[in-house]
Image 1 (spheres, rainbow, N blue to C red):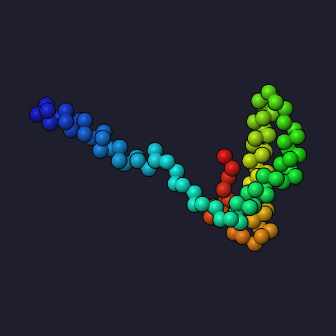
Image 2: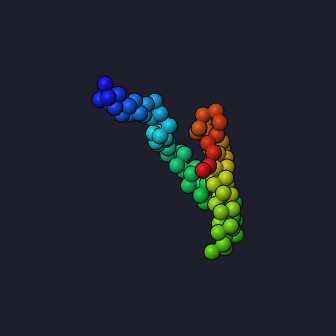
Length: 101
């Protein structure tokens, strides 16, 4: 009886791991970008607003770097969406636009 109880006590936690597999699995891969999306991504990286933002960088100032990195992600996403709209392309991300992380 003890062996059965011990085996059951060991197997129950292992069986429960399958219930939570989706919580720990990696995020699904994004579909590859189309050539038009790649061009818009490059155009966003060369945008004048991003160039102006990079002029504000102060090496060694971590507070400034953190703020500028957040603003850079926002500006890149905005410039990318604006380029896609100007070309008449649909935005990626479904109903809600993708948030920069």
